[in-house]
Image 1 (cartoon, rainbow, N blue to C red):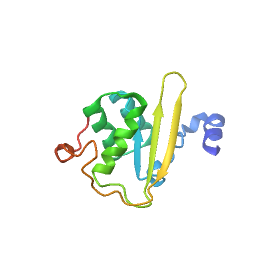
Image 2: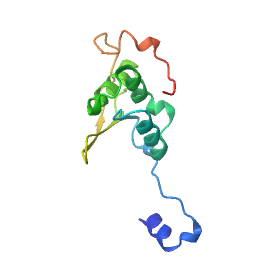
Image 3: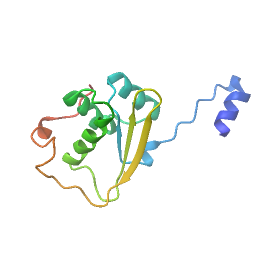
Image 4: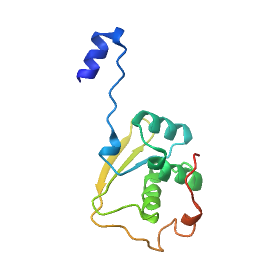
Length: 132
C-alpha cells in the first residue's frame, strides 16, 4: 500500500511497483497454458524463473492450449519429474473466458514418487527444459 501511495503522490521519484517474491511462498508454480505470450507475461510480471515455468511450457509443447485443464497436466509433469516433496506448496492458477479465474495452493502431504501410471511417464526422460 505504501508503495502505491508513494508512486501516486511523488511521481517524480519514478518508484517501481512492488512485486512480491512469490517463489518464497511456493515451490511449484503451474499457471494455465494460454499460449507462449501468456506464459512469458506471467513469468515477467510475477518474476518466476525459467525452471518454475517449465511444467507449463512443456504442457504447452505436448498438449497445446487445453484451457484451464492444463494445470492438471502441469501438476502431473512436476510429479513425474519427482520434484514434489512432502511439505512443498504447489500454486495452480487458471483463467477462463471473460472474468473467470481460479487460484489454489496445495501442500503436498507426502513425497510423490515415480509411478509408471503418470501421463508423462513414457516421454518424461526425453523432455529437457527449453524455452518454448
